Length: 450
Image 1 (cartoon, rainbow, N blue to C red):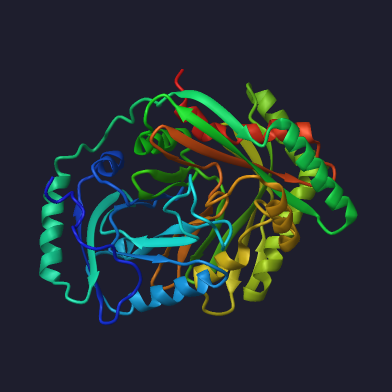
Image 2: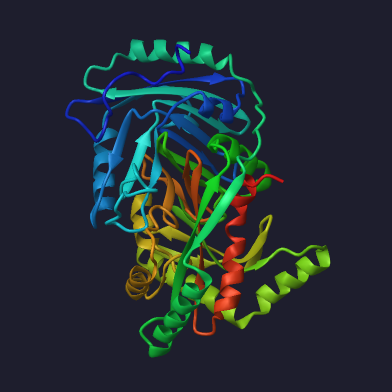
């Protein structure tokens, strides 16, 4: 279709001298985000927050990438340069937002299945739909030295006409089917890894470490990632949903339950989410599981470690307050949850807070340096972007990020799903193995046929 095709020009990476970002927006009738994504090739992005903001984009007007220990600094600096000269129309909801994420490790190697995923990558979509407060807007953008606002406005009109051919609702289709799965590490290897971590904790130089597993999945048919996301919308309505797809061959996606940080007008919102038990088959059994979560000394200890660490990390930035602990109930699992807020004492960028918090003890461990050493020495696969920050930021430095857990990377007839568990002094390898398997279910359930 004429307006739905990405612009045919060279990939835009990083700021350029004399370049301007031109953005034009109009309100449009509601449209199926799955149909929109399916009609576009990569790169594709999708972000949906539990509070209702949903953004989907295709193409990249400009992309920022970074690698190494200074990746957060480079992202902030290059974004500031790009946002310096902006010509845009539209409401605040459609303001330019860089969408993307980072790898768990700043020296991440983008080898399969992570081909196309650098240590950090954020893009301003060329074509974007934004839904908030019951309204949908279409935005098109171009970034360059000789961008014509009239040309951008013309492309907006052509794209709007093409959107009218898409349905407002679109069936999500069926799962591709699972032919074979293989978990890394094996249960025997996992037991050895957990016992080794417990020994390190007993030695006194480690308090907690999160060990991850990877589930390789061979699919019966090619995966339809937009279809999976649509099914996850219905199954996990209270979770975030994200998609980062730099190429047609690989997409990172999932429905993470955990907010890493939200920054708006100088106020930081985050949370500690640690400790988990399954949902019950009956309301009575479900309540019993929740009670065991609240009364477990092991899980309360693990949660306290996470809360204290997050509060310590935020303390230099402003006044930190701990909220009341509760239970976060998801479709197949429930967690201890403690909200944490901070009123910033200065002007901070959300990426600064992301850098301060990542990795949280819920996905890394304590102390962070020792935990990362154990993870590096223990895990036999590349985490890639698993358990790392995914989200967005704008020209004011505000933004929102989730923790990229309950996630997978997929393309064609292959998928790799990830899950991890926090290991503390009284962890039992068998119990941890049983618990970690539940964390594959959000995506695995959407891949398996009945």
